[in-house]
Amino acid sequence: MAQHSPAPTRICPDCDGFPAVAIDTGTVLDDGTRATLLVTCRRCQGTGTTCTAAPAPVVQREHA
Image (cartoon, rainbow, N blue to C red; front, side, top):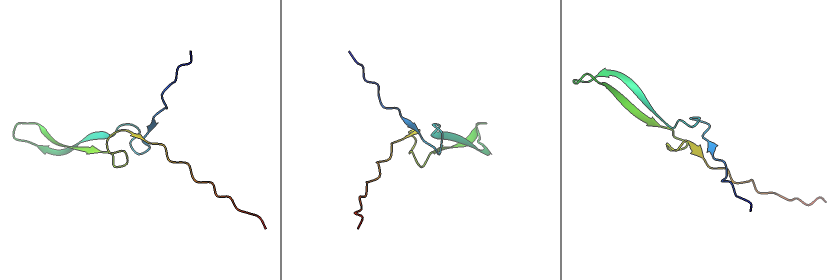
């Protein structure tokens, strides 16, 4: 019996599949830890993948 394989996921071209990063601000807090910012990819909203684009519509023209 044939087995279906899931459709391959497309990795986000902006973040290459690493959707969230912690950026060190250089500030040292009172407890000795460093302040960091968690930033997520804008294109994939932190998922690391993108959906496939819808196919472009086919335009048929009549030749006169």
